[in-house]
Amino acid sequence: MLGAKDSDSAIRVAVMRHENASEDVLMLGAKDGESDIRVAAMEHENASTAILMLGAKDGESDVRRAVVENKNTSLAILLDLAKDDDYKVRSLVMLNVLATPEILMIGAKDEHWNVRKSVMLNARATPEILMIGAKDEHWQVRKYVMLNARATPEMERIINEFEGEDDAAIARKSSSFVPQSTLPRFFKGCPFLIT
Image 1 (tube, rainbow, N blue to C red):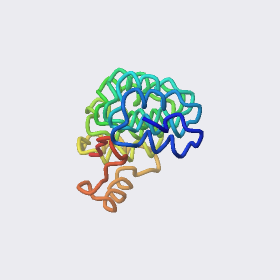
Image 2 (cartoon, one colour):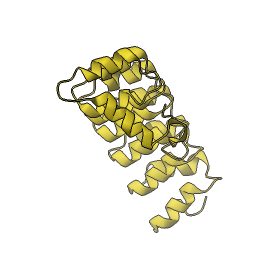
Image 3 (cartoon, helix red, strand yellow):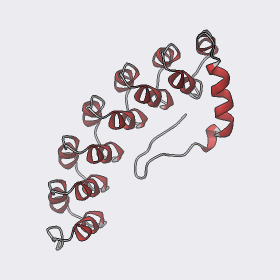
């Protein structure tokens, strides 16, 4: 496709976003020196596993986040990105509907509370994983446990045991502002689920 090597980066982005961009064109974009072109290549619905694997190893976190958001991203790539250096990448992995309980368990034990919170929002979080969240040191993680449809009265009891905090009540109040039935899919082109 003409334009994939154009000196104007806006043209290269447009080429990467074209619905008929071929594997070869997307591979050129995946190797481009500018991150916005690489992001556009990773976002394309025709991005192959080879292209997404290249993006998963990219030095720019925006590119790796685009990989996580692509519906073609394999479980193996998600597993690798669940251990990414950037907590925002790891958080997106935990929100992805393809994230397995194995991947979610990695996130449930993550050092960053935002990653652990994202785990609690995933519909595939098992009761075992939610129980880890119910006992989490960070109140926001505990709050998001109560927003998960799989939360149990036992989890609510544990959350309420935290001295001086009524996280379960905070979660119930918060969830009344965002009805479960209307929680959005967060990212275009990627089937993220919130329970």
